[in-house]
Amino acid sequence: MGMFERDTEIYLDRDALREDYQPENLVGRDTELNRYRAALQPVINGEQPNNIFLYGKTGVGKTAGTRYLIDHLEEDAAKYEDIDLTVKMLNCDGLSSSYQIATRLVNEFRDETSQISTTGYPRATVYDMLWTELDSCGGTIYIVLDEVDHIEDDSILYQLPRARANDNLSSAKIGIIGISNDFSFRDDLSPKVKSSLCEEEIQFPAYDAKELIQILQQRADVAFHDGVLEDGVIELCAAYGAKDAGDARQSLDLLMKTGDLARDKDTDTISEDLVREARDVLERGRIQEGISGLTQHGHLVVYAMVTLDQEGKTPARTRDIRPRYTNFAEKAGIDPLVPRRMRDHLGELSMLGIISAIERNEGRRGGTYREYSLEMDPEMILAALEKTVDDVGIHKSVTNLVDSEATLSDFQST
Image (tube, rainbow, N blue to C red; front, side, top):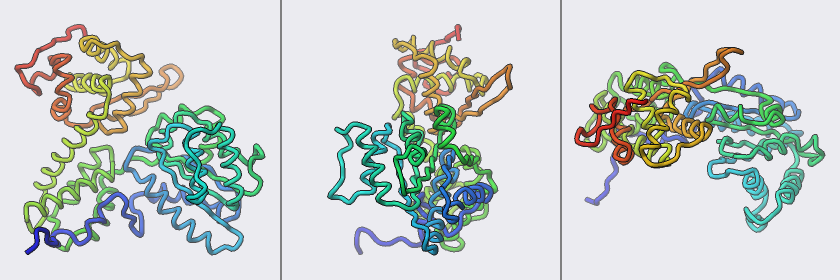
């Protein structure tokens, strides 16, 4: 017997639960995919492609839906002799400037022997190179910018959609698909960019439990042997996913972790108890990973949210969170951030799923604002914030959740 032997008792195809698995049909997104397909239709008609902006939280099908429809668009476009379609998909994670996006796009159209450096050129020169490559390619070109909210300046988001109008292109017809997890990113775009990039807007809402059941069942039918999943397992994974901001990715991760635990424990079936155990393992890991990547100010904002949550003061507006955060920062011996920078940390925490944000609109008198709530287990969060709690002290609202021997701070002023 070797040290490693194949284990095929639980899984038939574990990869069917992974993020990059592409099912033959997407379930749970009929309305959004129909609108998306209509927005892509001009390509098949030989017309100028629409610029499309997709937004919604992580794990709600934006990227999966894009890959699915683009695959079909390329396949169907190939049937027409007068359509020459090229699609370039670029993930903007790690690319913070229009300059970096432009150089990456130039290299996407060039072979390995003609690549350019990502530094050292004037921006105008890089744009000229890009226009040359796009026109040399010709036909209809769709550029998909996933996680477009990582771009800190919007020059490229203005230049690409208007390249033909500005006489930078003569033959190529360019369409942009921007995908964002950050609802506020669209609001921060300049009006000239918003009018072109957001020509067609599609919001992907969070999945509800019924839609998540459809997704999980579709994947489970491929991933597991018959009879492995006990009654209620799919429904429980979907219920947790609906509670966790309707994130299909988290639901699939939970189902896969449950299967892995069943395999590790050498059980014949997967039970609801294993789902609960797997969720605890995953949530602890997500909290630890998310909080470890935050700055000290991010830790203080999280701590402020936990204490407000324990006092029953959430959902809370920024103006309600700021005094608590400021107090904590002063006790930690650092200068508080200005309100805008503190809001940036709230946005980051929302993207991580540690808190949730709901936009409110009270019309002309009340204006638009966001309310924030805690989304993860406060005791687990506090365990990950151990150093911050040591630096600041235990707030009276969380004394029952942390080590009682630590220093107690009442913060009566907050």
